[in-house]
Image 1 (cartoon, rainbow, N blue to C red):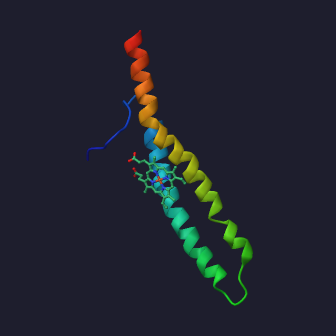
Image 2 (image 1 turned 90 degrees about the vertical axis):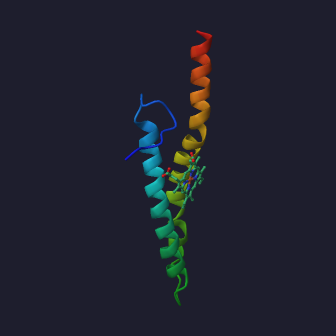
Image 3 (image 1 turned 60 degrees about the horizontal axis):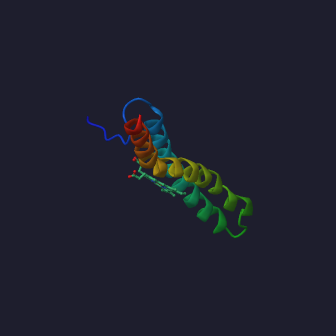
Length: 83
Ligand code: HEM
């Protein structure tokens, strides 16, 4: 199976972070569904409303890294050209 990479295969980090982002997004969706059920009860479980914030924070961090990857690669190439 072929795989699309955004940077040269020098580092395994981009692939690991992309896979983490993908699976954390699944956990985030499940936590939102669980929270919706918890809040729809006759006696809502209020603390459950904070649960999705944790995977969302991880998604923000890994997503920001993925967003910046192509720019890192560009800077890296530019640095090499200058040398
Ligand atoms: C919270 C802020 C988030 C940021 C900054 C962010 C950013 C990104 C970026 C930059 C990519 C890579 C796009 C590309 O190169 O084509 C990506 C991929 C993706 N994002 Fe997010 N994301 C965020 C939240 C989410 C959420 C809430 C979900 C779903 C619940 C999600 C699901 C995904 C999935 C499934 C991918 C594709 C991963 C793969 O390549 O397999 N992200 N995201």
